[in-house]
Length: 152
Image 1 (cartoon, rainbow, N blue to C red):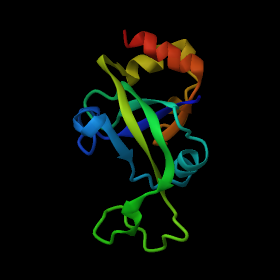
Image 2: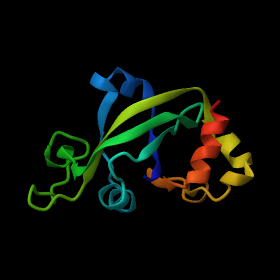
Image 3: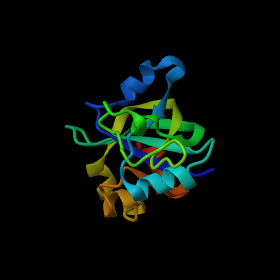
Image 4: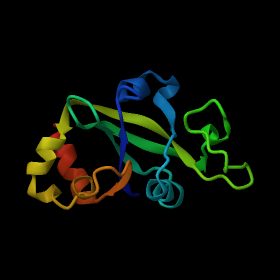
């Protein structure tokens, strides 16, 4: 099992939106960064744990956890001309973009804010602090445990 941080802008899709989904499960799609795509396609596995991170909002930080319940498959948005995620170079035979399905595990009562993460020595090597714009990123087991403890 591996650990991940998935970023979302809450005005586009929040942890509350995930909580309202049937079975609290949804497709994590719209990834249009090649490094994030490669991680999603090649590394994210069934049963992996995910931090749900809200970005570009008043309280930036980790707001809960989810689990991967379906591994990478072609993102259907890439084929829809009306979608903001349409890619004219993508074909069903050669998809360019992938998604996974996740299910909600827990909403944190209090988010673990980015400002707090920056202050914790055990978290100073997080990719979040070194490559902040990457929307899918690995988290070590120690980082996972530290953040879970902070959420309590």
